[in-house]
Image (cartoon, rainbow, N blue to C red; front, side):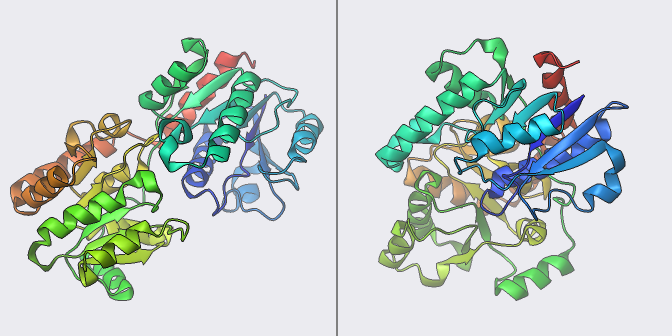
Length: 371
């Protein structure tokens, strides 16, 4: 069997999907049966795995395709590569994909944000998303989703048999664990952060609900603690920065922008509290990362977040800034509760692994009927 895994999304343009792609690929290789091979489809010069050819030997073939997931040419370039390498199955990790690949196909769908949160998405984007997701679903023999919430959304909006959709949760890398204080202090010094802070990690897209978060923070401004907002920042959404200025929060909210992946465990570990107020998530990986680093979590009671965090987090209505402020204030004033949540979070995070993700994905391939 030759499994063609499309890793063209393992780039900086797809931060979350890229991490899924790299970790799934890395965990899958050791689980391949004797004689089976993985064909990693990538763009020229793209690093798909550290030292992949040297560390995986003959189990991995790297097939370069000079076409991005956004290009029309992928419609014939990728199928040509699949034929050349004799692929038994093709797994696309993105809904923009070749829609006639010529072999049994699996596709991963992460969320339906453009359809669930239409007020945050331009009309043209919603239309294109709907069309291309429909084409991906028609192409695929089987669909992988990353949460029960996404599965429910998918089955509610598309005419799919339930047995065609399998939930396979994401995980966090082993590097996400509580970090020593000297490493945390060194990172804080480099980012010009104090020893104590409250943290959010993610983008500033509208559905992430950062406006309500800073409004809630303005209500409490607790104990000289800053709210640190880290992650990719798009200038297409200036409303959050504008609201911070309107509320005269000044140093009470720190926008540190993207943080290197290798620095994220230390950034999480230094936080007194992690807050994730998003209005919709397909999974919510930062919640799991924070718990794996031993940080208490306050999250929105929506979509996938309760199933990811389980009983290891405190939940709040993300549409209510007063409730959000009250919960933050309660947690910051209760050392015992934060310690309890941190312990529960560590236990919860241990239940997710990339090895499990890869093993369940391989079972989907068998279900599709590849011998």
